[in-house]
Image (cartoon, rainbow, N blue to C red; front, side):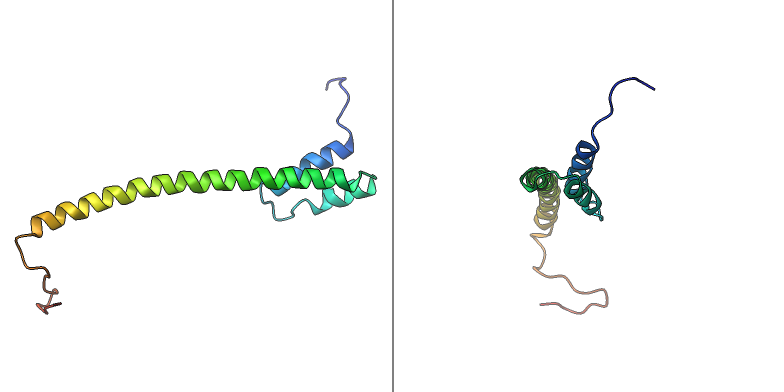
Length: 106
Protein backbone atom coordinates (compact mmCIF):
# COMPACT_ATOMS: atom_id res chain seq x y z
CA UNK A 1 0.00 0.00 0.00
CA UNK A 2 1.21 3.50 -0.76
CA UNK A 3 1.50 6.41 1.64
CA UNK A 4 -0.26 8.76 -0.75
CA UNK A 5 -3.35 10.43 0.71
CA UNK A 6 -6.68 8.92 -0.28
CA UNK A 7 -9.31 10.91 -2.11
CA UNK A 8 -11.74 12.72 0.14
CA UNK A 9 -15.00 10.79 0.53
CA UNK A 10 -16.99 13.61 -1.09
CA UNK A 11 -14.78 13.44 -4.18
CA UNK A 12 -15.28 9.67 -4.36
CA UNK A 13 -19.04 10.20 -4.01
CA UNK A 14 -19.00 12.80 -6.82
CA UNK A 15 -17.07 10.44 -9.09
CA UNK A 16 -19.44 7.60 -8.27
CA UNK A 17 -22.48 9.80 -8.82
CA UNK A 18 -21.19 11.02 -12.18
CA UNK A 19 -20.17 7.59 -13.42
CA UNK A 20 -23.48 6.08 -12.31
CA UNK A 21 -25.42 8.68 -14.25
CA UNK A 22 -23.17 8.54 -17.31
CA UNK A 23 -23.32 4.73 -17.43
CA UNK A 24 -27.08 4.61 -16.87
CA UNK A 25 -26.57 2.48 -13.76
CA UNK A 26 -29.93 1.33 -12.37
CA UNK A 27 -29.21 2.86 -8.94
CA UNK A 28 -28.65 6.26 -10.64
CA UNK A 29 -26.18 7.35 -7.96
CA UNK A 30 -28.91 8.08 -5.42
CA UNK A 31 -26.81 6.71 -2.55
CA UNK A 32 -23.93 9.02 -3.48
CA UNK A 33 -26.34 11.91 -3.82
CA UNK A 34 -27.45 11.44 -0.21
CA UNK A 35 -23.82 11.13 0.94
CA UNK A 36 -22.94 14.39 -0.76
CA UNK A 37 -25.88 16.21 0.78
CA UNK A 38 -25.12 14.73 4.20
CA UNK A 39 -21.48 15.85 3.85
CA UNK A 40 -22.65 19.40 3.21
CA UNK A 41 -21.58 19.64 -0.42
CA UNK A 42 -23.37 22.67 -1.90
CA UNK A 43 -26.31 21.89 -4.19
CA UNK A 44 -24.81 23.95 -7.03
CA UNK A 45 -21.74 21.68 -7.03
CA UNK A 46 -23.90 18.55 -6.99
CA UNK A 47 -26.02 19.98 -9.82
CA UNK A 48 -22.87 20.72 -11.82
CA UNK A 49 -21.73 17.09 -11.44
CA UNK A 50 -25.15 15.84 -12.53
CA UNK A 51 -25.23 18.20 -15.52
CA UNK A 52 -21.75 17.16 -16.68
CA UNK A 53 -22.53 13.45 -16.25
CA UNK A 54 -25.77 13.75 -18.20
CA UNK A 55 -24.01 15.68 -20.94
CA UNK A 56 -21.35 12.98 -21.28
CA UNK A 57 -24.02 10.24 -21.25
CA UNK A 58 -26.14 11.98 -23.88
CA UNK A 59 -23.17 12.83 -26.07
CA UNK A 60 -21.98 9.21 -25.96
CA UNK A 61 -25.47 8.00 -26.89
CA UNK A 62 -25.64 10.41 -29.81
CA UNK A 63 -22.23 9.28 -31.08
CA UNK A 64 -23.20 5.62 -30.74
CA UNK A 65 -26.47 6.27 -32.55
CA UNK A 66 -24.63 8.11 -35.31
CA UNK A 67 -22.09 5.29 -35.70
CA UNK A 68 -24.92 2.75 -35.78
CA UNK A 69 -26.79 4.77 -38.40
CA UNK A 70 -23.68 4.99 -40.57
CA UNK A 71 -23.15 1.24 -40.40
CA UNK A 72 -26.85 0.62 -40.97
CA UNK A 73 -26.77 2.86 -44.04
CA UNK A 74 -23.83 0.86 -45.43
CA UNK A 75 -25.74 -2.37 -44.92
CA UNK A 76 -28.84 -0.85 -46.54
CA UNK A 77 -26.81 0.30 -49.55
CA UNK A 78 -25.39 -3.20 -49.98
CA UNK A 79 -28.87 -4.72 -49.75
CA UNK A 80 -30.32 -2.17 -52.19
CA UNK A 81 -27.53 -2.90 -54.64
CA UNK A 82 -28.18 -6.62 -54.35
CA UNK A 83 -31.93 -6.15 -54.84
CA UNK A 84 -31.37 -3.86 -57.83
CA UNK A 85 -29.10 -6.42 -59.47
CA UNK A 86 -31.76 -9.09 -58.91
CA UNK A 87 -34.36 -6.86 -60.57
CA UNK A 88 -32.08 -6.29 -63.56
CA UNK A 89 -31.91 -10.04 -64.05
CA UNK A 90 -35.70 -10.26 -63.82
CA UNK A 91 -36.38 -7.24 -66.09
CA UNK A 92 -37.09 -9.42 -69.08
CA UNK A 93 -39.57 -11.47 -67.05
CA UNK A 94 -43.07 -10.61 -65.86
CA UNK A 95 -43.35 -7.89 -63.22
CA UNK A 96 -44.69 -10.42 -60.74
CA UNK A 97 -43.97 -14.01 -60.16
CA UNK A 98 -46.43 -16.65 -59.03
CA UNK A 99 -46.55 -18.05 -55.51
CA UNK A 100 -45.18 -21.52 -54.77
CA UNK A 101 -48.52 -23.08 -55.60
CA UNK A 102 -48.73 -21.14 -58.86
CA UNK A 103 -51.14 -18.42 -57.71
CA UNK A 104 -50.70 -15.12 -59.51
CA UNK A 105 -50.03 -12.11 -57.31
CA UNK A 106 -50.94 -9.56 -59.95
